[in-house]
Structures are given as C-alpha cells and as structure tokens.
Image (cartoon, rainbow, N blue to C red; front, top):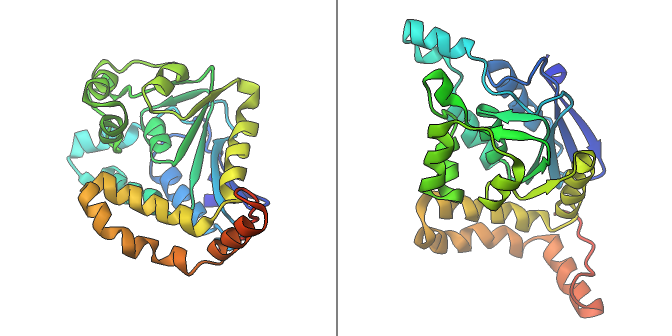
Length: 259
C-alpha cells in the first residue's frame, strides 16, 4: 500500500511525510506513486507546510536501476516512470515543502530534494548526481535546476564528474538552504516548517506560483501574471488579520489562520 511506503503524520499545521521504502527509498514507480498519493491525502485546510523526510538510514540512494535496464534492453519508454509528470505535479503543489536530507542523497533523491521549496541537510550527508557512473545523466530535472540555482559551470561539474558533495559545499552553491548538525535535522526542518505553516498560506501559494512563472517564462511574463496570481491574496482572511494586527500592535504580531 502507498501508506506503507510514505507515511503522513499531522503535527499541528505541519504534515510530516516520511519515506520508508526499504532498503534505500529508491526512486521508481512505487515510491513516486506513493509520494503523489501522499500529497492527495494532505488536508489543505489544516496544513500550512509539509516536511519530507526519511525514516531510513538514507534520504534516497537514487533510482531503481531495473527501470533503466529494461528500457536499455527493450527501448520501451514506458519502462521508466513518468518523471516529467511527477515533477510537474510535485512542484505545482500549493503548500510549501521542506526537504530534510539525511545520509546518502544521490541521483533521483537529490533531484527530488531540488523540487522542494526549502532544503535542510544534515552535515554528514553525502549528496550528488552520480548518474554518469551508469552511463546516464540526471533524468528528473536535476541539470536544469542546478543551472538555475548554481549556474551552468557548476551544473556541468556536478553531472559530468558525478561526485558526492558535502552539504556545506552545496549550500555555498545555492543548492541547499541550511546545513545543521545531524542530531538537529528533524528539529531544524520542523522549525522552518512551523514558521511557514503559521504564515499567510494564500500568499505563500501565490509566491510559489509567481516564482514558477518567473523561472519557466521569465520576469516579463511574471510581471504580466502578477495581478491574476495575487488576486486570491486580496480576498484572503489572512490579509485582513495582518492589516488589523499591524494597526493594533505593529509588524510581526499577526496570528494568521491560513485562509
């Protein structure tokens, strides 16, 4: 069952999504279907942020290479899970997702983390795009997102050399938001998620959409899309709460309701 592969626990306004697909959370049909099914179980009214974590020794050791072996042997595109379809659904989800990386995070696991909205990594984690060792390159959007955040030169280095990097290096390269001690990983991810979850959820969803338009279509397209994307903010209860709190107590005093 999908819930056996990816569990969900509601902690206040945070949905903690835990990958538990033994032995190594390998990316393939089972895990990606379970992750999308888990998104489908999220209660939007009660959830302002999601934490994606692993209960296993590693966040994800990469892809299930049986898919690649079958495609290489048969030439069937269907042998490999619909990666582009997964990416589109995952990144379009309106609730911010915080990835908490532990252990090894390689190949598709790294790409999954790059699709999240905030990335926290344990200092001992080993992270990289190692597909070149199989005669491949990143297949789930890793190259594009590395170019976008770290620049073309670093993106080529990461994918062509196929090395494993320490999180501090990737933080400097703008691929990770925060590096913490191993024993602080879960707490740090939850703290970030808590801050997000108690913010104005309608505005946060609009921020995700506007960033996506900017990345996909450019600044001019985002400028033209702003009015439509921001329209739900003007109708939100949180805006009324924020303005009232500002007048009563100054900035930072609002207690948003997420609607």
